[in-house]
Image 1: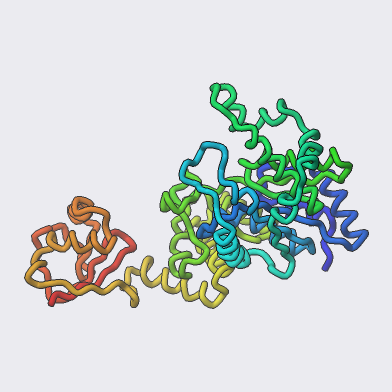
Image 2 (image 1 turned 120 degrees about the horizontal axis):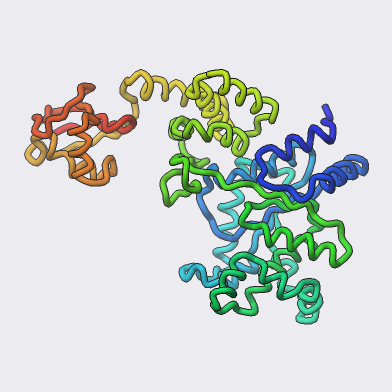
Length: 404
């Protein structure tokens, strides 16, 4: 069933931080439908190869929503920039990438993003296709479409200029090059995070200067991680990776703070806005947040692992973390009975296997009643170790140890 334009806009606007502008978007959708021509939805990516987590998928899910409405994604790999390196001075460790590295990274990245977006409605382009062919005369003409005053408005340039810090002339070409990408691919909509505001709006400016229809600028918010405060990040450990096992993914979603449940529904699922409004009402009317999170965990896990695996992950979670039973696939270790005699002795083995960070952390957990041995709580660090035993450390970590 074909959706009305208003219904399409309702879906497209779900969870976005800003849109410039809605009336222009409506006109583009009307013309697209009238001419039976899909819109070009642009997303620019650095030629790095991160392990994608749910924070990265916020913009990808928005692309998927456009694709489901019949439009075409154009992913632009910024290989031209990657070969030069990062000129901003913000990162001293980011070195120029070789062509071989860029190709490998792009392949790794696209393999991951196609877990979210439809490869049959996606074109991947490298901006060196057109940027490397520009003559100096071309660059002068393109640069004439903006001003130094406009470029200085960019947040990082403005701060450095105000502080009297040097700005290389070549750095001004980065937003110009990204804007030229929009001209080259005839972008109708460009997506990006709120940190990309200047660059995406520059695309609109440059398209207008050459007489093209301006792209819609759509900005998605930054997703908070499992701590509920910081941006989702692998380095902070507050992330949910899209390639993690179903059981791990399900459990992590259950750790999402209650105040972020709706935000996760809006940003990392394809649930319809009307359904999300229903969930908001259910929460207001007293529905248990845990039950809503079980629904959220099922939806997210199903997106990346399928319904059957999500169901198994839910059963695993219910067995291990709700009923307190022991998991079938816990870590199993063998240790020397001469070396490990009392509970305190085992701390170093647990540190080596990353079950606790330090010996003192293990001692603290034992004293606070956060450790069980063979399903019985113990706070005695001098407890004698049996020949074979299972430790439950905190709420979620299990290890089976056999002394030999």
